[in-house]
Length: 426
Image (tube, rainbow, N blue to C red):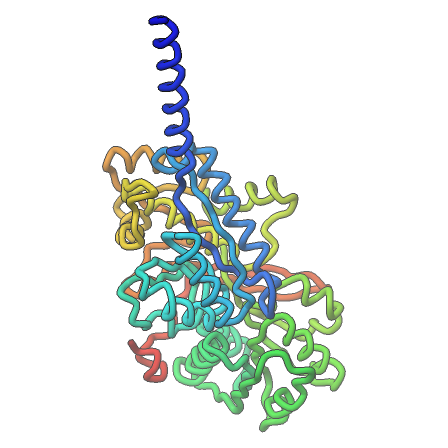
């Protein structure tokens, strides 16, 4: 009987130990994503979500973070502020996410940051490009990994002037994103250079026709080039009307969201022949970019097809490294812990780290030893400034024979904020 009691006791202890071990391993660091899987920006949502899942694969290959898994919870912004706010509330209150990466659109990003993440002290890393994001009163919980529109507007304004144009028009989507690029391009063209902006015409999303807005721009006093700032669905309508009415006799410049294969496929190459140069988010040469490109191709059978995937990837990598540096367990870690470690893991003078499985393992080991690291991303150097904005590349592109052609990736100077309207000053 004595031996049987010992055996039963040992079995009970073993079962209890395994149960507790299972509970421990079931704990994971929860990070939310909010990308536009539906709505006007849906062309980008799946691709950026895929890029985030690639980060998780690399973390898993590296053995997890501090011995725990990374759990990603994906939600849809619907490309709308109200839906984005609802998704963020669910991530924070139901899913218990300790950080969020997401919001392709600036309007969505500003709504959910002010309505959810800032008051709940959850770090939020966005791709929204409006310069207004920089000056939100955020208690340093609002970050951005994409290049903002003081960069995009500078590149587009420079390009239009350097191509010899003297009088331009701008047609822009009437939201924070569209107005940001429009204002920055106008300031570049008319204040940094000596050109004239004869028309700046806003439009609302989702109309069946934009001939009125385009006509008001095209027919305004000998304009010799126009910049269109539009999402793919509205740009499709516009370019069809430009072509049908013979307005393609002048060059049209494109905003970041028009660099998508779907736009050319839905229009046909002939409708896009008048776009000479567009700007969008760039990818910066180096091991992180190579790993992002090749890893994505291995996982999904194609190279990353859309802009803004690289800074989405980099945003999640930055969060992962900040979690690791905190040294806190999933039960202990807070949004403030992640916020306070974002800059230290993405800034000099730490040892340079790249987004490969080996790079994650090296980073985790160095951080466990109390050493500094400096993540160099697929989209740029990261290194968040005082506004929470990363150093990120801009890419110029054109369309030739129905194909999107990259011209160059560069790290330009932004439009100086003191030249911008007062609301951008901060």
